[in-house]
Every structure is written in C-alpha cells, then in structure tokens.
Image (tube, rainbow, N blue to C red; front, side, top):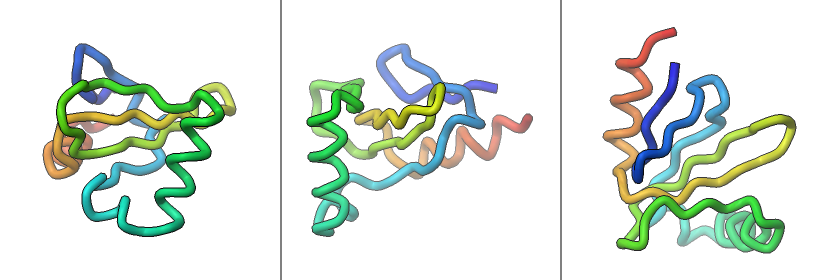
Length: 85
C-alpha cells in the first residue's frame, strides 16, 4: 500500500521509517544535524513550498530519503493506520 505525502507524491508504506513533526523535532540539535546532513547528501525531497509541517524518513533501495511535507504528522499517521497491508 502507498501513503500520500502531499504534492501528488506517495511512497510505499513499508518504506517509511518515521514520521516527524518538523516544528517540535527541529529544536533538537540531533535533528538539525540529521536534516542538514541529509540535505548535503541530496537525500531531501521537498513536497511543498509552503511552511512544512512534517518530515518523513524512508529507506528506498538501501538509501535514505527525507520528504518535507505540508501535511501534518497526525494526518499522515491516520493515513498510515487506515491503509492496512
């Protein structure tokens, strides 16, 4: 099954490692470092030009991808739970 992440983009449910609230987690030094490193490595995909609400970490073909989305983590979590395999 697929989860819609915004901007007409979806990923396979089993590829999702974590869904995070960007506002609450980006306060952490570790999260800032993770996002900065992911950006530097070309692993970040922006799905919005608006103020982002979440970031989703996925593993695809052995590589990490981080999606920045305007969809709230609560909505993504709901989609994840509703979309049973």
